[in-house]
Length: 279
Ligand code: C2E
Ligand code: CA
Ligand code: CA
Ligand code: CA
Image (tube, helix red, strand yellow):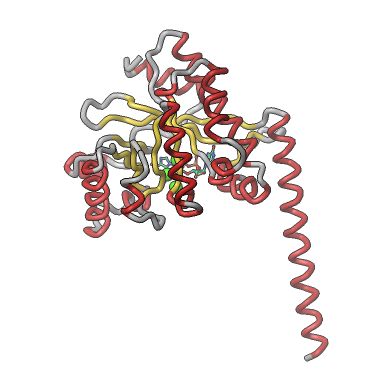
């Protein structure tokens, strides 16, 4: 039994070493990926339910390795968060999205606000509002064309600090959205202190919204809450015509999901927009 215990211990230790090593390698690769320009952006359009027009888009990070394989965010964003690399990568995608929208506008499209995900680590590292101002100045993008997506967890880390930073960001003129709304622990009392423009209903509530009464009630409650506070609502993970219909009935403002479009490469996105004559 003693020996077996030791073997078990060694077994776990070896397995853990392997995991630690794999993670260290991933961090090294990711650091190089940023420097070598292996990160790129997919843009997913968002639509206004009232007029069916493209109303915005979300920039989503992708990693194309040297061998050409494209790695989805769930395989590398968590490690970027743990290692702190998300601060540099987050600044990179912010600049890239602003640059890209500015180029489209220079090419004659009126453009739509581009939404960028911001990690909690970025918000509390250095002077984030100053970084945002600098990028807008550098790229020439009007502040109103940039929307930042933050999660409820950001708020809960340090409520007072979050309120201060949100208000600085609003003063710059960017729009603020709470991402994955309904999955976190935000308190209603903070909602009125945070000057937020948009609540994004998490896709987990949309998936079964047509067959689960509870999910429809949650969606409806978020929409009513948002509207009563003067906010707009975007539903994500909209995959079917039934999803669209129920969200219209519930008074949702905008939608994003595979039913309309998957996230697209930059040139595919502009072709999509032009084909719909939205540009
Ligand atoms: P998210 O911010 O909630 O982004 C929405 C995710 O839902 C995207 O996954 C998108 O491709 C996916 N999606 C869109 N429409 C549908 C649909 O109809 N059905 C389903 N099932 N999924 C849909 P993606 O691109 O894999 O990104 C996953 C997550 O990774 C994002 O979730 C976000 O939390 C994180 N992420 C992506 N890019 C960035 C980034 O630049 N910075 C940070 N901090 N996080 C990012
Ligand atoms: Ca998002
Ligand atoms: Ca989301
Ligand atoms: Ca999500």
